[in-house]
Image (cartoon, rainbow, N blue to C red; front, top):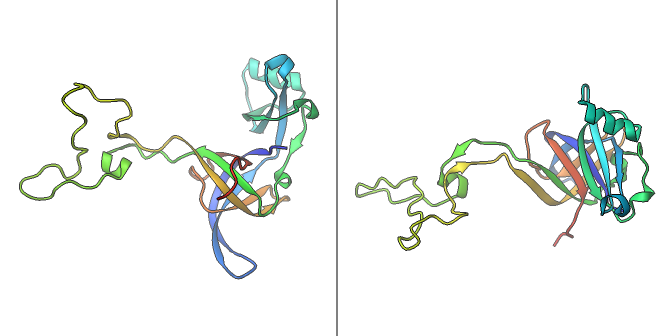
Amino acid sequence: MPKMLIGKKLAMSQIFTEDGRLIPVTVIEAGPCVVTQIKTAATDGYEAVQIGYGELKKGTKPQVGHFTKSGVTPLRYLKEMRVENAAEYQPGQEFKVDIFTAGEKIDVEGTSKGKGFAGAIKRWHFSRGPMSHGSKNHRRPASSGAKGPARTFKGKRAPGQLGGGRVTVQNLEIVRVDADKNLLLVKGAIPGPKKGLVYVKSAVKSAQ
């Protein structure tokens, strides 16, 4: 069964393993999440379960109607999870961090920190240009294309917005699960700032 939770990135810390090694961990407050909608192949064309997280203090009429239909409290964040047999789930069913275990591999999806407009050297790690003989090319991206096409091709690496995009870090290891406080301690770093929204799910690829 695929697993997924919605949560927040709280902070980074360090803990000692059983063999005395000090490792960096990210603390994630995940769940509890509630099933808000069931999608089946007969009605929607595919099998999926929609889960929600976080209290929604004031919602629009369509939002309130959506949750009323499922008989659950209005929730702020929603996310779909593809499953093989959605009929096995029920609206209002709750998922907590105890669906994961220590040592399990997960993928964490979040929004990376936005760093504003950045030049090509910072954004794409270009090498610096010549520094002598009157050059003014120290931090410029150099040529943007040949004369022949008379245009710049799409995808050209150039200055622009850095960060603020969807990022998924794969095959992170769960070091500890605290079911009482709804906390996951994950080895390594995950995208986003403190209190940033993240999606924790079963690893799609096995670790190499």
